[in-house]
Length: 98
Picture: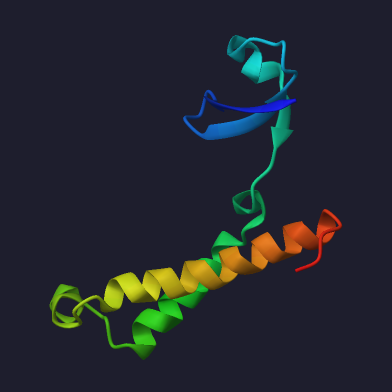
C-alpha cells in the first residue's frame, strides 16, 4: 500500500491509500487517511482567538501593527493547542501511546 495525495472537488488536498499496483488516477477510489483537522472544533478556536485578542488588547489595525507579531502569536496559540490536542487524540484512538 502507498499514500497518494489528490485534490477533491472542493479544493481540499486529501491523502488516500492505494495498492502499490494501482495508478495515481485511482486516488478518488482510495482508502481515505483522515487528518486531525477533520475533527477540530472551529467554534472553540474562534472563541479562543477572540478571547486572546481581547486579552492582548488587539482591537484594531493600529493595535495589531504596534504589537510586532502579536496577531501571529495569538492565531498560533489559538490554533496550535487545539491542533496538537487533536493529533494526540488521533494517536490514542489509533492505539499508539506518546
